[in-house]
Image (cartoon, rainbow, N blue to C red; front, side, top):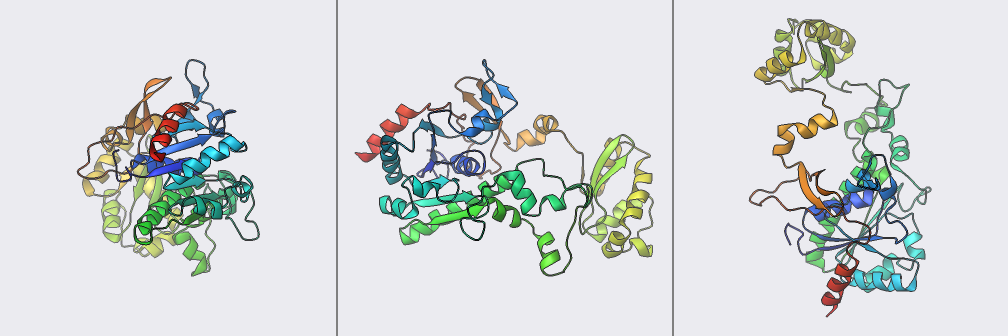
Length: 385
């Protein structure tokens, strides 16, 4: 198999987004990912839409986003036959991923102790809403709930009085990313110890883990951060500005860049209220007004060219279709073509990593429900021999 994890087998018991995203990341690196789905409909995200595509308009584009490079098998985890099959698969796997509510896997007969008994080398990734323990450890959690509870919504939106959710399901996706990162570390450690371990993360942990300077603003600085709209919480000028035909983004991270922008816009960079980032931030509203008065004289294309020539970071605000039509996006391998069993040749958002010296990988389309039942059973029987 291709990729750094080409000898790794992942048993994916997860559904929705966080767990499937983690499994997809491992699949992108070459792992054989066996996605276990209930025969009565499969992963719940198969029913999430619109949009739905296909001849019968029954294929969820949501499901397509998190399940490339996987094999789908249908298993009833509550039946004796299903449990026996999972035991066989656990013995032949390197990683198991689950995002059930706390205690569900135990009730199905697959506690951590049982999994380790079946396969001492198994790495288990467990993703929960708010953590597996603590006063609210068993609480269910979906992305938007976690965005609110973990403080992200308080940082997002036009003002502190209007909290917004991040447009992407960022809590789920970050939990998946952190989970895959933890699995990679556990697999590396297994090379030394010979034993697997349990890796735990949650939607709460994933969002709190990216508070970064917003977190230290409170824990060290004693200041509760709040939403700043389209402008940075600590740097000025840094944000979205109106010009003659719409909005442009300008990011000024140091004094050299500020002097270039100020000269371009005919603003004196040395007047006291604009002389340092500290002063510019205090007078940010005035600064934005002065900049937008100058920016209104020309359109976005003019300013993007001028700022680019100065080496100042600036950019447009693209719609999703514009991003995927952009040649720079395509040049980075961020679109991949796959052959879907129903849809034929389609393009999917691709993995964000590239490895020097490796040819572009051929990716497999997200599977139909139970598409690989026979293939996986044959593979399993061969492994057991």
